[in-house]
Length: 83
Image (cartoon, rainbow, N blue to C red; front, side):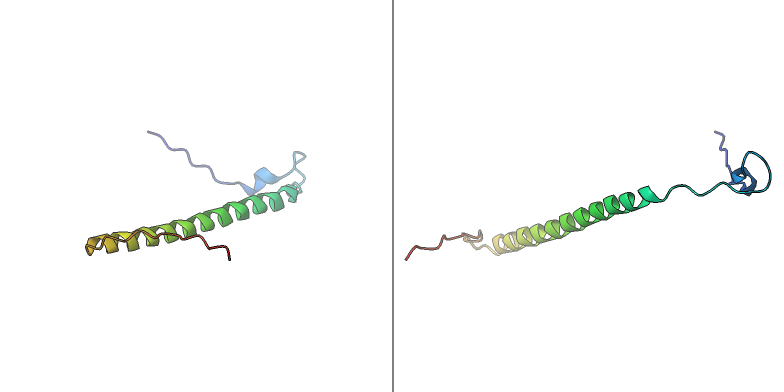
């Protein structure tokens, strides 16, 4: 298996004329869009992690209750009564 390593040559960024001037940097307009997308992905990832941790904690409570031999471990939500 052969690996080919390339190094960035500072002379490769020179303009085609060879007069020593560097090419202008790439347009940074898309950088803000990329940052917003990555931030949105990060927020969704963190929210999913928090939800997963809460769900795991609830399941652990029910399993601990059942391991103690109790029979009424499930939470029952009672609707409010109309007055």
